[in-house]
Amino acid sequence: HRLQLAEKDEQIRAMNQQVEELRRKGTSGSQQLAGEVLELSLEEILRHAFPQDRFDPVPKGQNGGDLIQTVMSPTGVLSGKIVWECKRTKAWNKAWLSKLREDQRAVSANLAVIATETLPDGVSSFDCIEAVWVTPLPTITAVATALRAGLIETDKARRAAAIDDTAKDRVFHYLTSQPFRQR
Image (cartoon, rainbow, N blue to C red):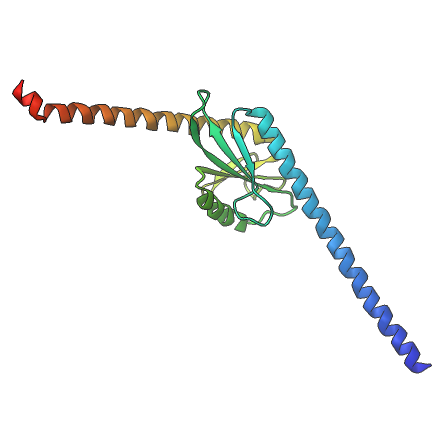
């Protein structure tokens, strides 16, 4: 009987471990599901606010943030990229900043943004921390609008400067050319 009792005790202990492991998996699965819901919500908000832009969700398990927004100017010209990362946690983690900067480089994005429920200490609304924009969920559209406007204006200025340089180059080449000297 003693051996049978020991065997039953061992079975109960093993079953308790399995129950605890399943409970832990259930909790982490629901956190993952909550994060996915937030990502879909972010994409929907941005698509609605900026229908001319292109939005590419990053597949699960791949580096690159959660969503890549390709900003298009009102004339349909590609103006830049914003990589978005969503966080739905109770505590801020500074390591997110360096990871998102790596993701930004990997996808050649101009800007990186973390949309989070929990802001770092000292940030009350939104801020740029270590070259990454951090915003709470309610101000996503406002921050995206400002960042898009900056990208579009910067691209417009870059294009104008390129045209000016091209015109200057043409005039210089003409003034130093053989036909100009002959005239």
